[in-house]
Image 1 (cartoon, rainbow, N blue to C red):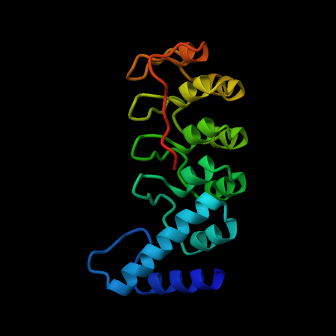
Image 2 (cartoon, one colour):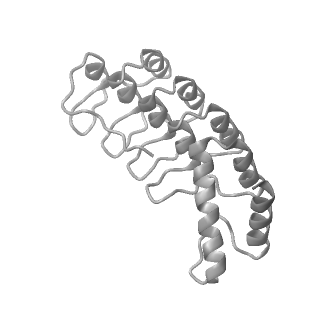
Length: 189
């Protein structure tokens, strides 16, 4: 597998095809190879395959590449509970503030899934503490709703606004007390 990825990435990059930039003029065989690479890349993130991910990193793959739902490798690794892969991606330059198509970040996914060690890693990133998804929800709201007190306390220490309201009027403060207008939802990557 490692040799296959190295060769395929090398061939695509040497041929002028950039891993992060699809081309409509790309020959059909290259388009098929690119699709296979994308699938391998996102599956490596979901499954925590650090050795495969390292091959993509070595090939200078765009770590901000998003799938059809906007999930990045970092979002997938965080959501699926792969702390080693999260560290690897962060070290390689993956953007922890990048959101999916619904505005959810890797931190929000980690909080939702109860991946507290991963959430701790992601909270060290220089992202806005009150970064919002499209529903106006913040990481603190997720932490409050899912009773992740340690994470909520850490977010508060970083300046999270517990009185900030989402689109339905929920606040982290009220969610922590079990009072909410509608449940906060997270689409599973």
